[in-house]
Each structure stands twice: as C-alpha cells, then as structure tokens.
Length: 542
Image (cartoon, rainbow, N blue to C red; front, side, top):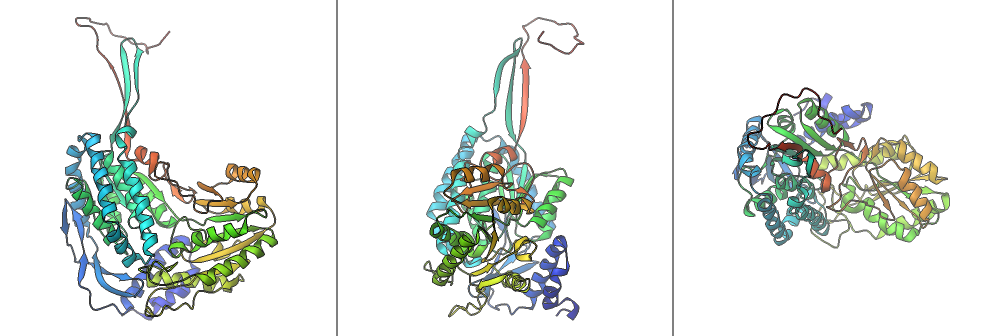
C-alpha cells in the first residue's frame, strides 16, 4: 500500500532527526500511514456528519474511522468536511448573525440556562460517548462535563458582563459611554483530550455575547461534541448560530482564511497553535491559541510527602496523562525527598488498575489511538536510551479481554535531566519523570528556562517559600499544594511563553473581551435653534 521509504516503521525511526516544526507534520503523516495500514473493523455502520443551519449534513466524500481505544475496533467513521461544506457553515453563521446580535442579552442567556439543565439531564449519555471514543474512565468523563457545564453557567451571566461604562457631562452637556459589541462569525478548533469541556469553553460565551459560531472539533472523538450542539438547538439556540464541521487541515485552513470569520480560538499542541496564530493574524483575525505544556511540580524537603504522592498520582496519571495540565515532571529538592517520593509513587502505582473506561473501578483507561500509543511508547524508549532510570515500566501492560486496546501502564522515571527528550517535549501520556536538584532556586530556574509555561505547582509547608515561588515563577497558572491549578469558570485559563499565543486567556472574564469589541460613543444635543460657528482649535477644559 505504501512504498518502503515511507513506511510507518521507518517514519517512526526517522522522527528524532527532525526539529519540532517538522515533527508536527511528520507525526501527522505517520498517523495517516499507520491508520491506513491497520486492519480496520469491517463493521462500520455509522458515519458522523456535520451540523449546519440546524440540520445534519453528510458530506461523506472523505471519511476516517473513529476507534474505541479500549477495543481497538471501529464501528463508526467521521466525515471530513470539504472546503465547500465549511464555507456553507460560515455562510449559515453569517446569515444568522444580525438577528442573533439584536436578540436581547437576557434572552440569549436564557438559552444557556436551558442548556445547562439539558447537559445535566443527559450527563450519563455524554460521558458514555466521551469514554467510547477517548477512553477515559466514566467518572473522569463526568468530571470533564461538569467543568464544561460551569462555563455554560458562567455564560448565562453575560448580560451583567456585557454592561459598558457611562460618563455624564464629560464636556458641556456632552455624555460618553462604551459598549461591548459582538464580532460576527467566530470559530473554535478543539482537541481530542476534552471533547466536551473545551468546546464549552468557547462557543457558549461567544454566542451569549451575540456572535455566531463555527466549531471544528477533534476528528478522533467527535460524537459528544455533536450531541451537545444538538442539545443547544433543543435549548432554543436558533439554527445557524452554532454550526459544527468535522474535518482536518482543509477545514482548519478554510476557517483561518475566510474573511467572514472574525476570530478563532484554538487549543492543542504548540506547533499547531503557532501556525493557527500566525495564519489567522495574517488574514486579519483575532486569534487566541493555547499550546502545549510541560508542567513541573516542585517538592520541597518540608512537604508532606504522602499527601504529595496522592496528589501526584492523579495529576500525572489521571486521564492517562492526556491533559495539558497534567504533571509529567516532578522536581525533588534534595535526595532525601527524592528517594521518599519515588518509594511512595512505586507503592501507589502497584495498586493502580488499568482497564476500559466503562468500569469506574479502573484508575486509568487506554490512550486515545494506536498511533498515539506508539508515540508515547517511543518516548519511554528514548528515556531509557538517554540514561534516565526507568523505575516502573508500564509498556507491558495487558488487559484481559481487551488485548487489542491501546493500554499503557503508568511509567516512572528517576534521574531525568534537562536536555532529554522526555524532559523537553510534551509526551501527553502516563509518564512521570523525577528530576533531582539541591535548591528551590535551581528548581525554579529549570521551570523558567523551559519553553512552556502553562502550569506548575509547589508542595511545601513554608509560606515564605510558597510566596517567593508564586511571585517569581514564569508560568501562567500556579498551584500551592494544589497539583492541577485549573481556574474555575469565573477566572480565566492560560499559560505563558510558548503555551499561549495571543493576549487573552480562555473562558472567564477574558472570554468576554475576546468575543467582543469595545465601541465608545460621545454625544451632545444642542439647544434648539442654536447655531454655532466653526471651531478650529482642539477642545480644551481650560
């Protein structure tokens, strides 16, 4: 099927010869070749299409399989939208915008309130859809949805958040005020790891502010995203206000290049985020692009090691490590605390249950796809090759009855050094590396020198050390004895450095600013019959 020069195996072997930008495209090609050479299930019975103008649209000329990662089988495919289909979605959003913009904010907010109720009523179904395509444990899927629901709830407060400012008599009988007006057609491009939550970061606030929206979710797990969009219609969202197009780079580039799209929000890897940002800005759009992460946890000598171990287990291995706020690196300050945390982690990992996400007794499910599974395994291989100590090896995990599933057990490295690939690059899998340093300053220097600045945390009983850490660390989200410092819905989410391209963070107050533009109006009503002469000097209060 493929010439030997470009076989999946050879592509994997060649991977580390490329720089980070080349790797992005390299892995995409490898993913494609591996997919087409795999033995797909012949029982594909369903094709997931698109939602345009309130109707399901097929456009099934190009499709790709959607796998259940716990079984390695596919009974569903997803349609990949053509340029014409994406343009139809944009046209629908453009047509719906004038009426929706002029809908009173309170009426728009009521749709969000109804959607919240529908999401809660359908939580079990949504969680099951997430688990079937992503693999995360059902309880974790419910948690993801709940964080999304909180963003919908916050969007229902939009009338308060959209209030402008008013000043009377800024000059003689002159009043001035500001308004926050909708942009028009906006778009979101979302990742596979949170198919419900991240879209709910974007479009609820966008439409509550009076915009219309075109959503391009991950093609790896599209079902829950599409189902939630249909619930929005049931909640009263008019056709065309929210459109969903499944697709690949063709869909992304169409959204980035079409002049009718005024703003684009993205969550994904840093190379793609940088491409989205540069390409969108080149075409005159407002862009918010959240990229990758390599989050460090700092463990101080005075920390409660047992509590830290418990927290790190969930932070490192929850959702199989497929979180941008996961903790893949632990920086132990001092060998004593390093030895203690390694011993504690080994004990806890031995208790972990790995299996299908449909069983809530499991702690960790499978990785999302076979290519991603192979990619994470390759990182573990590289860590061993570069001299890190593999304390716990999860590569041999087998789950009875699910031999074809993409299961990788928890992996734990000690003696990880800066410069190693497992230190520098985002792995997005259940791999935790321990780095040993002598001082807090040394730990902070490691974090500040890293290209990513998404999240970090410190475990300590020392308030002075914690305050110094939070003041001087060059990271966007910081936790003190909190391993995953993800802000709640009424704050905003975002990193620093190469973890975020753009000025505004996701959801929360920043979302209102991202999805609106300020207009300032200054007005005066002269007395009837008064005629004034021309004034050539700039007005002055003197």
